[in-house]
Length: 226
Image (tube, rainbow, N blue to C red; front, side, top):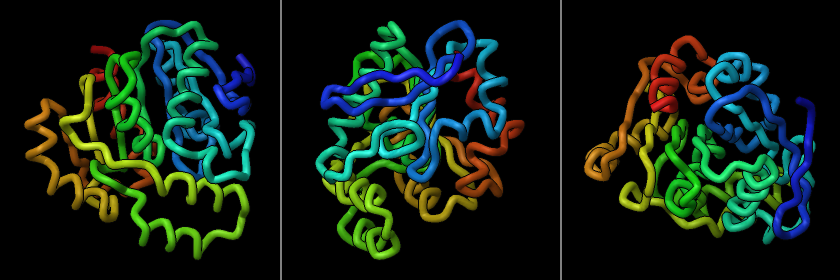
């Protein structure tokens, strides 16, 4: 199925695609990517035999609308976007896999959406990620107006803690995943106390968490199928 559009609560159009049959699985890409990430690395072919795979371009990315107002990128708007796409697909409940920024949005969904059955998040951690220092550093590196609006918008996102999660969750990272792996290792006790799972792959960098299909698939597929 080709590109389809859903409309979010504030009128922003969101591009998405649907492949396969089975339980609904929503895939969320990183900050600087779009839904083509999943096709590029072969995940659609890998997943569509077991799931109805939904890939969407987050607002500001790919074929979706890209508002220039920072307020358009608050977490509430991103949550509304996911609901709009799920509604357009006639999906009441779904599974989720998010990587990097998509993983961070996945944490917020898992803490706030009763529609989420289970979630896999990769390349992110708990707590407040978008601190003043982090956002200012990103803005200093960014000239593109939409990207600047997005960074300004995510500055208001609150942190999510392990005890906030309301569905089964698998969190994974790699030993070469920058500061993410260090943060998650410090949070391991709280993650496990909340009944969530944490797995660390040897030698995987941030991008490898989504591109190393043959390494990652044996971990996440059984969890998503459960």
